[in-house]
Length: 533
Image (cartoon, rainbow, N blue to C red):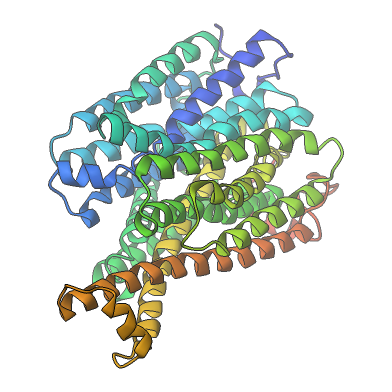
């Protein structure tokens, strides 16, 4: 298969070759994204087997996110240096090998190290799969075709807990990692057969810029993932991590403006406001999307006492709703404008969160399905459109870099969402416990009548039972309160529609909706950038 310069890659006509590119990208994106959540349900099994506490074992998730974020941001540079096809082959082989190593790990240190390596190799897979799809089709078909990519990228985190729950409960938690072997083998065969080559370009690597980028992303990800456990600004460790991230971010931005395209990441792509707005919206929506993946397992397993497999099945149904939404999304564009589609998606998501907030502690599995399906359906309804629209003004030779930055913002949105929900749950449980425990009157006739029903046990045991019951109920109340807050936040995202026009391109520059950002674009061009070069 001959090499094609990135700026000369032409869309493929409908047919077998294009269909197989779609299948290939689906395999790649699904394999990479499913590992974000596949271990969430299995963490208790892992903790017991590796002699780790529940807090310590969360590093398995944290270090995967750190490694993934680092490499996603520099995917464009790596693609130029190695060529797209070589990079994606290396990434798949490394991802599968590190997955096997994770499954063979005998202690917490080993699995945390291999999860970091797994995250590094998973980094290029999602942005490169997106860039491959965008190159394969004409612009007017991108939203429809990107629906397949979204099935992998956003459906993976939804299906991960279901698959992980079954594997951990019926086989062994190690199969959460070994399951990547057959999927990775199929993905590698498809890559070798159908992925078009792009040549590698001899160029210098900005090692200093790379070092500051690693410092920025790793310190930020660790702070976000561990802040709730370490009491945020009450911990010197978290304060130092956030300070390092902030200073490194300033250096990265300064070097980016000074060095232009010689920098490790091309931040000049943000001169195109259409691209920037899509990145910001995906970040916000990614936060709310992953929130359901955090809240639901806690509600079902910890709050209601369901089995992991039952919780996984319900969350898997959410994923099926998302698949439906993603396929409808591309077809919406034929009769609805982008702005109307976006508003409709926000309203559906917000309504789903509000419905979720009105559930109670007596719900059964099938009662929990409809609101979650609405949330994920609404998210998927707009995500393919955003993923296509972001690249409307980017030339082919900048798509790998654009896909890297687009997916980096999505990944950070996931991290912010996870952190925000974790913090809200902790603070909400504390506030609700303080409020309702303070209302308990030992002399209350109702309380004494309730305690009398617990005949045959000591008073201390009775009060311990009441405390456990109160803790469980306050946890449920907190989750439903957070869902209500998320509903109002999602309704608020609909207001961003005023900044989007119905066409991504405008005469006289790259801007969208009511915002004219030509001065913003001139600022970057003065530093040697052009969003459309």
